[in-house]
Length: 178
Image 1 (tube, one colour):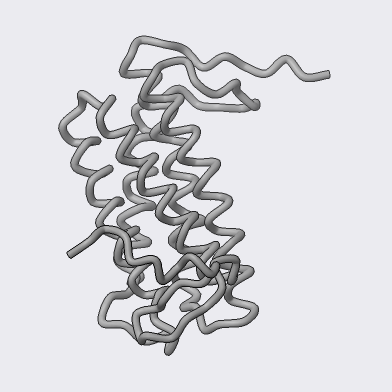
Image 2 (tube, rainbow, N blue to C red; image 1 turned 180 degrees about the vertical axis):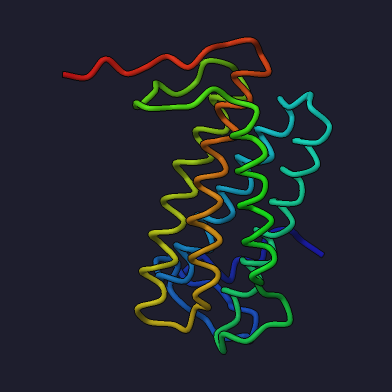
């Protein structure tokens, strides 16, 4: 099988049901942003030396593929989905990482370590993915839990970014705003 098909040369792409849409369709923008997020979570994973955090990052990557699979279905129906349990697990991971960190009462500058910086980039892409999925939901059926998952994941990525800095022996650098 060739990697190239030439079928997208006209600016369209094929969905899982065989239908074609323009590459700037809100569904494709959401899917592309989720793919970018997944790649950046992977980029963070290669800088991670904490075994537990690494496994959590890999779990998030698997779930992002599942969300992409779900959103790629024009019918909005898929055997893959996000559950309340997955949301609760993300919240538990947030609580666990926050328990390992000093409290925070101000904005901080992102990126005091390589892992922290990569996770902050993933966080910003996650927020963009969340916005893209919300835009997609204006035209297509999107389960509400997908939006909740992405919202919670962005919070988790922020907490993990701080944890990455902490594991590297780095302190939060507060923003000295006016």
